[in-house]
Length: 521
Image (cartoon, rainbow, N blue to C red; front, top):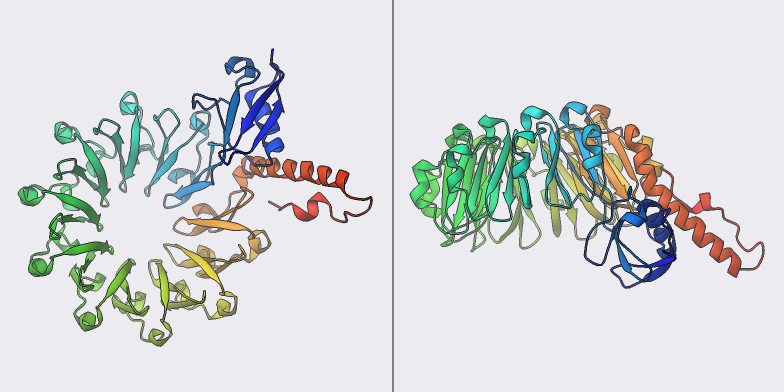
């Protein structure tokens, strides 16, 4: 017979919580959350098993005196072209946006428990790794939303990679399982016997490349998107990492040289600069070009010149480069002195001459398809590129102070989180650049996720605020009831703490109500 159970947090804080055999695990868990003063989380037994919230406690194989642990994790999210998927703090998932792009997970909702991570295929599907290391998929069946044909193979999954139309899962034993559009890498049967001891997988728009434990590479999928590496196979040895453009791959070898393959127009042919590609430290990619940073801080570029594949006009400025940010068809390099050098399509940010002298002490750069935004050391922001797509922030310049991070929708807007947790947005109004309708809710924001035309802001209380084009996930009304459950747990905690505080303070000393201090959805 149960009376109480001990529940603890990873921080060491514990509470003794009343328990009854008539309770469900979910009821008991909410009681524990209130006692510990935290929001939703996963309840784990002493063996590390996550307890099913729908099951009765009497089936959970616990008894008085047992120590349980409540794991609290930050809300995570990812997005396809037009839909969002969020892993909530208790391991459940919420989805919203265009149903054709994975915005409706109703058919698999009961399977989305103890979700560890979610991967998105931009063409419209999601794949989630759940607690038992199996995989749950939903969205466009043609692009990976239906994994039924390989479901029995999706066990002990370590990680998942996605291209535009398919998924590839690395299994614990180093093998790989693929599904989705066959022409985009969803069918790996032709090279399945080679996929052993896989360490990492990279993808272009329609192909995959796997680095094996011995440093060799196996590629598959659409040949015109890099799925055929046979022409360079004998050079692909001791590969350290791979970068991808739209249709080409670039591999850095152990000696710092580079091997490329795929569409020549997208950077798959680096012969013109091959003798310069030595001691390469990192590579970045635009849609159709690559930029490599060498160990002496110089840069080598190749691919489509209109997409940043030709940096000759600024080559003498590219010295002591620390990092490079790529956009659709341009690059921006931060130098050691905090200044910035840009190249590529001028109108989309390849020309920063109008703000060049403002770009000092730059800490980081964010980009959408048409513009850049740089955060300076003092927390201010400098933008350039297409004015209507975020390249002009003059309307909000005075608000952009103490900026901590910036997120961008691909199609033309930026959103900045300030030091006080508020948010400032600008750029194309209907693509996320106008957050006025939800501005009062944008407080205590931890991080922001973006689809092509919408933003989702995640707050400290676990609630989510969305804006931008509704059909791209800018309207999360359909799942607000689920999201409010997260907030309800927080409200119950506030109510509980307020009651305790009221018992300690003199009468009439509390002039606020719970509604005054609790956040609104």
